[in-house]
Length: 352
Image 1: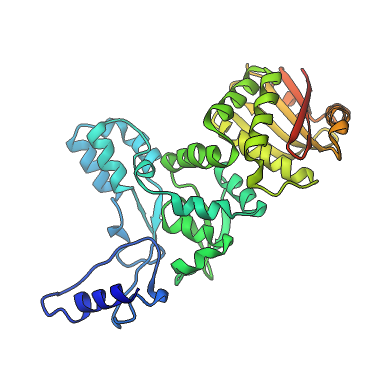
Image 2 (image 1 turned 180 degrees about the vertical axis):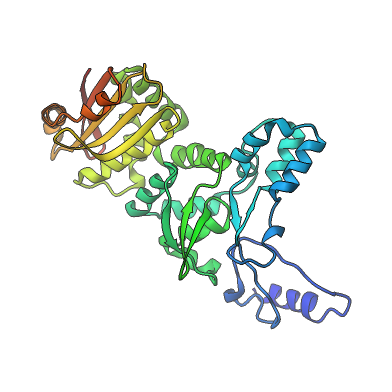
């Protein structure tokens, strides 16, 4: 810090050949003392109006570029993938992703695959279950309300709740609406970032790629024995990321988090009224000819109790008629699953 304090002071303050200096970054470091030798800094964040259009490409600029390269036919898809960032009140496209798309002419996750996500992962690893639940909501496309501090600095990242500041300032979440008093509605900005959460976040915290995708594929195909085996593998390998307890809520959220990546194929609902109660998780297929799913989670006090608890979960689905809402919406084929957990062990019972 001492070296860079002297360096920046000499380069930016005492340099007679410098008219204006511009520094860019994700987080403020002013509180670290690195700029204490400077007394005339003006800081503009993504929450400020001034210079907001300079942080990325406007829609008019993107349309002009695509037309020049005869790619204007794909404008709608480009908007879906790379638009959505809100700086002040200006909506912008990711410039790196737009340039990469023009060069390669394929819709891919360019920016998130070139950036180093270690800081995001480091904070996520320290996240508690409350944060994990809110991340699940974000992944479902929902908005969450958070307070953002204009003077937020790098050293404040040690607190897990500050992950929202980091995700917004580093481009993984957007400010959808300013509610006043530093409160904002946050959500995923575009498909590129959605793919980051799907591939990077879910795979990192909920199991290896092979086990994870095989498990979900087995569920969709109704191969419940394979689904159970892969879920068991994931629990054994990765459950240490979380605080295993005796609460159903923990396992409910864990299963929900894994299933969320199916949201393009299914409408996923949790704790919604149906029949004579509220089911834990339901998957309503967007293609009506496919099977729908109702899942109920239970916690056993011992491994010997697993089978009884799984049967109890199935019985609850039947007695409370949780499938009613799905049937009313035209889903004729249903698979009901009772999941029982004890520590890192799981047992699944089902019928269709």
